[in-house]
Amino acid sequence: MTSEEFLQQFGHFVDAPDGVQKLRELVLQLAVQGRLVEQVENDEPVDILLKNIRETKKELVDSGVVKKGKSYPVISEDEIPYIIPGSWRWVRINEIGHNWGQKVPDNNFTYIDVSAINKEAGVIHEPNVLTAKEAPSRARKIVKYGTVIYSTVRPYLLNVAVIENECIPEPIASTAFAIIHPFCGIDARYIYSYLRSPAFIHYVESVQTGIAYPAINDKQFFSGYFPLPPLAEQHRIVAKVDELMALCDQLEAEKKARYETHQRLIRAVHHPLTEASDATATQTAWHRIRDNFSNLYTTLESVHALRQTILQLAVQGKLIQQDPINDESVAELLEESAQQKAQLIKKKTIKKQKVLPAIREEEKPFLLPRGWKWARIGDILSLKHGFAFKSKYFTEIPTSYVLTTPGHFYETGGFRERGGKTKYYSEGVDAEFILEPGDLIIPMTEQAPGLLGSPAFIPNDGNTYIHNQRLGKLTPFSNAVHSEYLYWFFNSSYLRNELASSCSGTTVRHTSPEKVLRVLIPICALSEQKRIVTKVDELMSLCDQLENNIRNKNNTATKYAEAIVQQIAAA
Image (cartoon, rainbow, N blue to C red; front, side):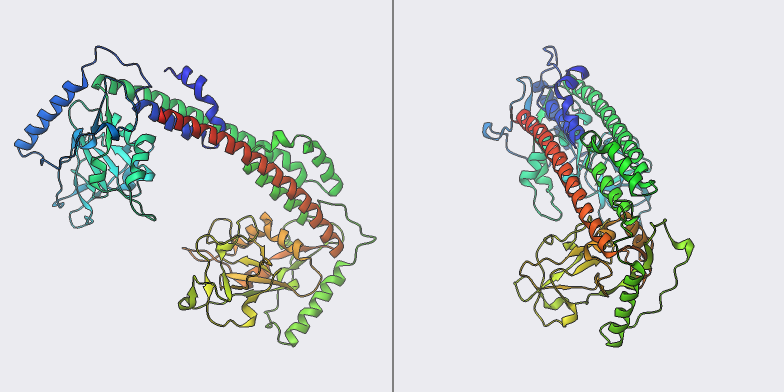
């Protein structure tokens, strides 16, 4: 199969999100089925190759170079996973190579562990040189030039490589690897291709054990099936695989270039929107792209950029027209909020905060429309941390309280079913830590990328939720700010960037209520906030439709590609 024929038959795979990866899998599957290159009648028969291998193995064992090793039963007809050409033979992996045994390092050595593997190229990349004293307990397996290594821990990561360079000092591999040093007549790169093929992956998945860290043992690995072609055909297969993988690299690079060009186009399209001087200019820019949505927004990333542009326009007062005649005074709203805050402090409903500093001109991130005003978040709402509930009272048995954690939050905003098992709390809880339906909550930690500040309303689903110390509850002092305006504000890239810059910590970065309350928020008339929310809801619904269309298209393309690969694998 030439590159042109391959592209003509399978080039449409690239349309799927992981299409190039599917092409790579297809190349390997065709290769190990004997369907990638022609069989040649004059190739030395595999039976002669196997006879020579057995004689070589006997000589190595008799001379003490290698140990005899375990014997495995001959593959029965019932075990054969798929049909191979008549000139090929099914053997077990233990028949195609041997190991070199183990040793405890007694001098400087080249340590090969998983981190030393460039799995995409299938080679060892910058291994560490260690002294004998530095040797980890797993540094035991002897390897040499031409040895194939396969990580048996978390095998789905496909950490497979051929040692193609001489290592000085001597190389020693981790016990996490199965070692195959090919016998004469076996191409190490053909072994590498097979170990990464869907056929072998399927075998590994059928025998591996463990969930968090799945693994296979050496017995399971070496008893695996191996489709053995004549040596000359192995070489032809490896050459063709290399050719088609290079083609896949090219397709991947072209796809990436198209993606980057598309992203630049989206930024160029959005620029007139975000730089518009007012809502009228925004509408003019919006009309230019409105009729080209289906052509412009073809990726989930481009729709995400559209969402952020919409929110940026919203918080800048450019999304809708102002109505200064009929809208209430923002100054009066902020004064009302200040009075309510003072009353709550006087009643000791909330604690007295540190006096927030006056807003300086240089702090203001962008210009606001006439009638809008900047405030600090702490001027309009309180932010209360949750409680560090004692872990000994957690249970999976449904009780009175459901513990709300960062796991309940989508990075793009919104409340979801917590991943994994729901945590219930079996002890009494102070009323101040019990959440009510409609309460607005944000994570105060960067536990996952994009999670910090991601807002969610507590649902009215019959559960009683409580929140832990990694979350903060937002409570406006008065009606000066609409709760859904706050929700969309906290979803904006402006706010997320402000919170990210306030974080501290290394392993898990987090912010604090004091830092959040100092962040600036643009305030407009309450009636305008409601109009903004209505418009944002409308446009976000449009984004939902665009995303659904993209996902449906991607799912169809992915399922089609998977079906073709499975069909070929079953042939």
